[in-house]
Length: 242
Length: 177
Image (tube, rainbow over all chains, first blue to last red; front, side, top):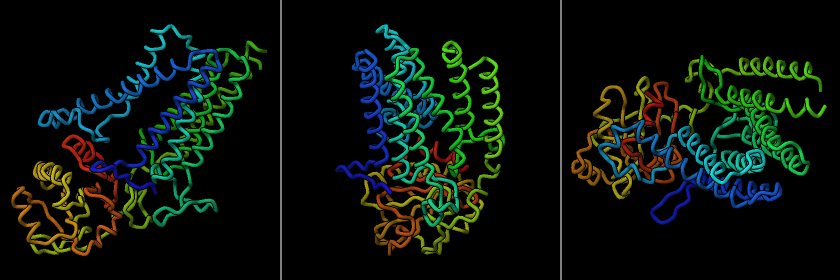
């Protein structure tokens, strides 16, 4: 289990540091991939950093709106350091929109930018999954498999390890594709296809998931939808190359 | 690859995809997921039971609150972030009186000191005194404050390390109400 890191009066959960590391590593790999595709790597760094910052602001703004009655009494908490006071989806949507705005503003080609972003995102995901294992987050479902890990007296699937390995496998495929001159955008679509399929396949090995409609696991539904969209987008590539 | 094969591949992916999602749907009753798990200070596990004497001298046993969502807070008077969040817990206790139980386990302090502090802050929720820190150890509490959010079935749903604010407390309470 990852401990809590004590920095003077600040106690920081080490998992947050892992998330920072995953963001940094993802940007670095994305920038490197951009160079290989003939883009300026700094653009990837900038788009990513603007996106991250905008995502943090929007995540907090969403929290303030959702819990306005609480903030009205303590407006100083709107800029408070509480790491839980963020909503995930507003942050992700606005972060992606701002990164997209950066790409448009600098008239960067969408295909190569997304092709460079895909391996970066996969590296970030792999690191975050390992962090979840060390922090005891996103626990696996109970199992009798011989490779089970025992957490709090229960033998569980090391589902975070499965997810890390899946992300690394998809990463390897995207990195191989970077070297071959395929259609712009196809690396990104293959990355989305692989990641979507991995979430769809591996989510059942987690003990708990967000669920809708009488227990259907939301990440599985989103993963399958993403994979089908990616398959549709890749259709042109494969059929044309015939 | 021909167009027909590609369409077939897409259709197979859709059908197999939906089947795998349907097979792996979660049981409707979320408390059922904790069945058979040993009590442990971890999300998804039944909360470990304990009995301590409260500030007012009564015996407090966690399991007697089964059926009511519980906010189990570990604190001490010397801890500044605890002092910051205790009024929020008091306010939530008043707002949800009878619906949610707020319990503040004091870690290893003299009864008289806790009494004076609670009086000064106007805190009225039950305060079991963990004089030997055995309950803190049972719950693996490594820094104060730490708060466990326990649902009606006695299952831990969230663990908050560090203080809550009014807003994050409202958010966390949604997971057990």
